[in-house]
Length: 321
Image 1 (cartoon, rainbow, N blue to C red):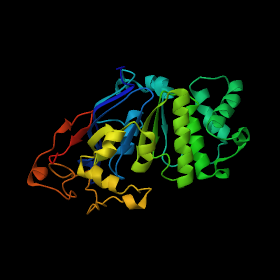
Image 2 (image 1 turned 180 degrees about the horizontal axis):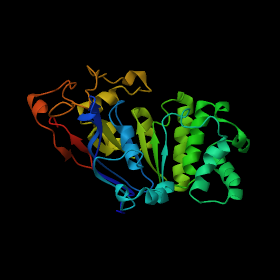
Image 3 (image 1 turned 90 degrees about the horizontal axis):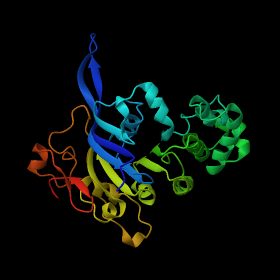
Image 4 (image 1 turned 90 degrees about the vertical axis):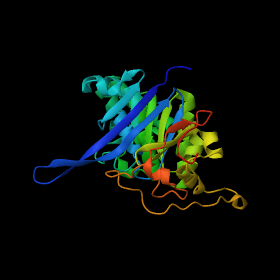
């Protein structure tokens, strides 16, 4: 198999907690706590979990909007965090991020044509006279019309703004797009349009995606492999069909039980998790999920489970398996 486009090994991203007049560090928010991921060219990897599980921090750590604490992130074989910021700028066109909120991610005072085209000029990828035509072309690829180029963000709906966010990432012709909850703020009918747009662009351009979402029904339609995060750690990873057919971790089972079933007669047994996700400043000892697990045992409270391959590249960290 070819070398992965993106390799993440034992990534940790912690944020200091400071208190007192001396602003001393008294602890750390363990937003991402030792996860590993590989993504190949043309592949879509889905990262799912509840809000607060660390998914968005993974995406921001990859593009160095957030600095990692430990671990390794390699893009096309290059350690991104070993580069100077000037060197990072050179590879940024190949590694783009679509932000979660289609409203706040656009400057309300800048016309759409300028918002999409400014990166071309900033990276020296097009002459000033070429930018307008390139922007019209990429807007068209994202389902928008050429006359939209001179409009301001407030003149667009949520779905159209998300298309603009996709166009802004796509205009640089990247190899990997990190899509952070790109459809969570949209209506169901618009979600379907955006998902189909992602699929079509991937087929036409050979794009790879890291698709971050809390909605497994969306991930099922788009992703090749899925990783399930809980409180900063990866609890299960596997091919999409295998993970949906045979979920092994109790947390994955609970998430899947909440996915709507199109045929009412095929209702799943709903697994309702009790309590809230614990604080990432003081995560539970042993298995982090043991405070909410319906099948918890004594060993779960004492020992961190090993992340094991159960066959067909299906990994899980659980004492019960």
